[in-house]
Image 1: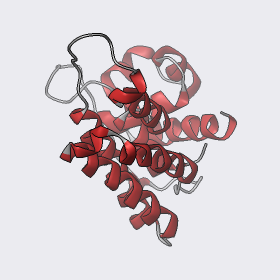
Image 2: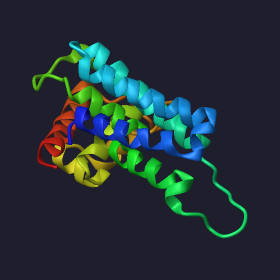
Image 3: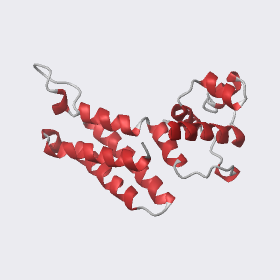
Image 4: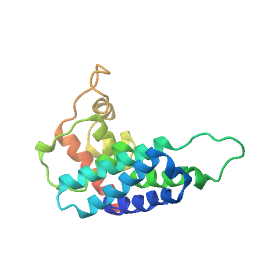
Length: 186
């Protein structure tokens, strides 16, 4: 499912909160409205920057919405649909993890040729790419032709371990191609 379809479906699910008693909770209302508005903004956008911004804010709307959902109840277990968790889970499934979503959005408009000016060795981005690829770190390292231990060093936040290293652009590009391959086939 591409970004546009995921956002369209997430907005449709977010509308379900409007008919729920949960709509009275400000953050649920704000999150649902944000998802809907940003899905529309993404669909209407004509440039990559606006699409990226809208998709990022839609994911933020999901964070706001899901953080406001009640996680406790008194008495018998309520209908799961009424608690909002079923809807939130479905939206979360569409958007994926924060880093995975941001990597998907970024990849949606990346050219398939190398461009080192787009080097982003951040651990979060690289982990998001691996998540999208759907492979273990060991499998990824093997596919891109580096040692598993070296990949682990690239995925360690700088300053937290003396072995952490900044991934060079060819590693990032290889991970992007693996992620794109999975997005196209999956």
